[in-house]
Length: 589
Image (cartoon, rainbow, N blue to C red; front, side, top):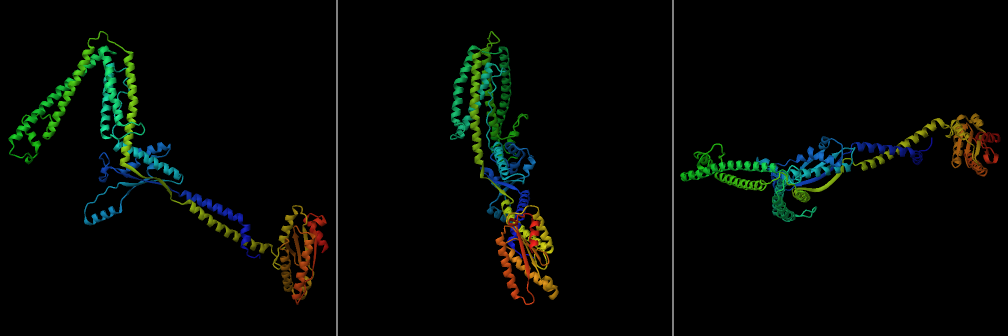
């Protein structure tokens, strides 16, 4: 059997090795990828003053589960343009509080002492896990979208300050008369101006980057409109008595007057009753000056409840200060209603003498439309500035501690590298095993047991393969025959003949290594098939064989080996068929 030659096995099995390594690596890749989980992580911090008590900026209780609420997740999915289940995304979002070690120690100490302990975390780690069908980019984008939508949700719910609506946006509708349009515009502008004054006082240094305006700038614009454009429109309408429907306008004004008078009468009655309670409260307190009111069962309330003649329809179960505040508020309402009533009466007096039911003016309509357009444009700036203020305030209360980072549960590159190494080793081992098994198989089936050379079956295989094509130039077929094999067998026995054949076979095997195939076609009969072997090269082979056999015979005592050798060259004989070349060599033996 052939010698164990590792490099020969690896060289012959290199394709098997590569295929095994490739298939193994691909299998490991798909398996590892099927178990892959992509995790995106970020951290946020609540920084409002009340967070230490677990409260949001508006005083409500903090609920971190809102981070993965349906509203937030739905917004994230819509931002990414995905078509997936809200619950499927929510189930993969996790929020974990970051609790400092010292707080854990405080908690343990409090529990040991049997004391109550409370701590509200300010920092939270948020993670989102995407399955193997997704990617790190998908996980990162999803968590980023979730945080962005939660930021907006949190700001709108707990931080954002109310932005007044633009009530004058649709005032150009035909539903309003000229003077009514002017009144609505004036009130809308006044409301926004009051809003801007409050913001100007609260945030004097704030200037929106998107609009370039501060609240002071915007308040100045609205003040100019109030002081100039509104009075101009009012003056023209009242001077010319412009109206779309004079009768309807007068009727509306009268309804306003009547309604305001009813409010004035009702509030006056309430004010009188409150005044009575206040006066009697003072008298009652004077009568009981020796008794501390705090010693009474219900304190100040007991005094009010004991006032003679109070109206049970009024809620007087309150303190004296509340009574005074309510009294002042009602009187302020009465005065405001009186002012509005006088204004309505004035408007009615202006239009009551109109001789025509319609006094139209395209110029006034144009002025109103231009003013509404201007207000709409300015309101867009106000809205954008206020929105940026809300975002600014939100950023002060909810901080993103770090950008989104992603990680993989399975390190596919590492597993792939290990798989390549393992399966390369496995492939090499397989190539060696297969190669060695092939050697063993060839030895059993295609090796002559005496000479250890390829047997007749292998010779036939080699000849059949060469017979399928023409031989090339300088192809030589050699026939070597042991002439005295029968003599040795008869004289010394078959064992001696077999030993001689084995040793002779080793000689021709060694000499043929650099020539080509040599096989034992039958006992004592050898065939050599040598490509690219010229006549001169073959003669050299014959000389070396002669010298080797001579040396061999010198060492032998029992017998000498006698042999014959003949060969035919395809180029010299002009024979390019293997069987013809073999016959030619056989005829020369």
